Amino acid sequence: MQDIIQLDSIYKIYEMGEIAFTALNNVSLSIKKGEFVSIMGASGSGKSTLMNILGCLDLPTKGRYFFEGVDVSRFSKNELAEIRNKKLGFVFQSFNLLGRTTVLENIELPLIYAKKLTKSSEHKIYETIRILGLEGLHKNYPSQLSGGQQQRVAIARAIINSPSLLLADEPTGNLDSATSKEVMNVLCKLNSEMNLTIVLVTHEEDIAGYTRRMIMLKDGKVLRDSETHPVLSVSSMTSM
Image (cartoon, rainbow, N blue to C red; front, side, top):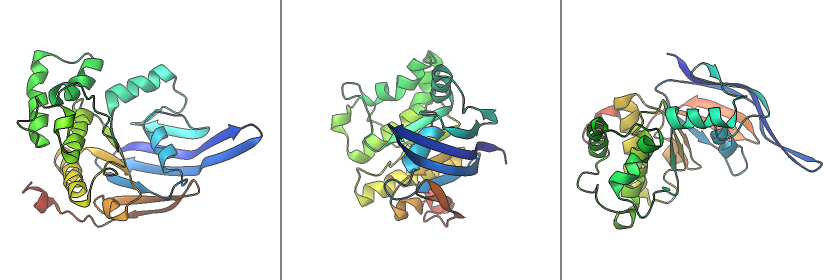
């Protein structure tokens, strides 16, 4: 299967006066289309820096990053923004929903930014709402939703543009264990049924256990890269 991500000897070095801090140190890895991968590590391990580079929010100091076969490691800010808008979806710990807009309006935002919001996109929006289990809530505001519902709205917004890659940064960080399980089940379903490539950053091993592969970082290096045994089977997802 084709690689969607390929990192070749990636370094990220931050210079603060005469002090240089190496956040990523010779990181090489590849991720294939349709994989569900978790990135783990303690605070300061480099996982957030790696996520920023994968999400085209930052560039490596050295090394090459190929996204869908294209070397984006020296792209301009405008070129990176175009990749983010057209190819990537983001889900964050804090949901980042607009409080004064409805569920429907929040989900529509990426289509508006990409100038893709048309009458024909209405079916896609409501189908996404259905897939995420948000039927009947489209007129509600974020303050009227539970934490799990807000995160599902954030996921719906992230996938409405049919991204090649979904990046989830601590998506369960603000949720209790039961709601975390609910959100992870949704991500598993999207990966299994839509073949959506997902890269998830977490510091919780039980959350990483939902993914099919775990990359462990330490001091900016890949300490371990191994297959996992997901806690949720495909058969159990069909009952969702």
